[in-house]
Image 1 (tube, rainbow, N blue to C red):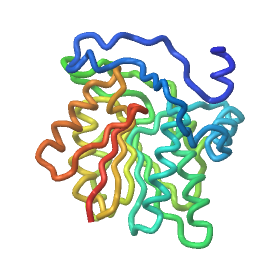
Image 2: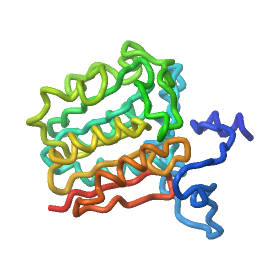
Image 3: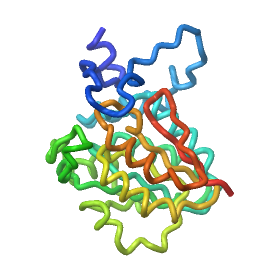
Length: 247
């Protein structure tokens, strides 16, 4: 079963208990006893990117359900005048997916700028009092490897470096959708501080690892930042949280 799931693009790993983190009793595998509509099941848009990644010798830690969230929000923001950002790229799986979706959605009009931010060499220093990850985690990637996966389309811009330094010079940007997948407290907080004021009305921020038990710092950063904002993060059973910038 494990190998079958992996062949379909899922990442299978042993569940680690949440341990001593806030609201630890609320972290548990989510099982819905009802038969529900799962729109991503059997969707070519999702499975094709997993096949493409395998063909390129790559993979994604983001499952089909979370990719479907991104697909829906890319459709929702397609008419907005703003860029698409991904902060935390790792091996480029979701970046490739978003590129493919942007090409589909804008087949007859200019494709929005897709900006990809990452060290492309692993995690920066972390706050050991909040974060579970360690400096250097996810270092099995590189800028060249991601370029070979995602491509060199004119609308794609790579920004190697540490957040927030790598964001400098982009203060005049207008952002329609930001996918924040940086896992650790300070990087999520810095991403929020820069992206939120530049998010256009009707735009979205998606926090990939808000509810993931190995990323308690990500949830803390989002909760802290939006505590005094009019928007409230919508927490999904996928582990994601979504913020909608009201018009």
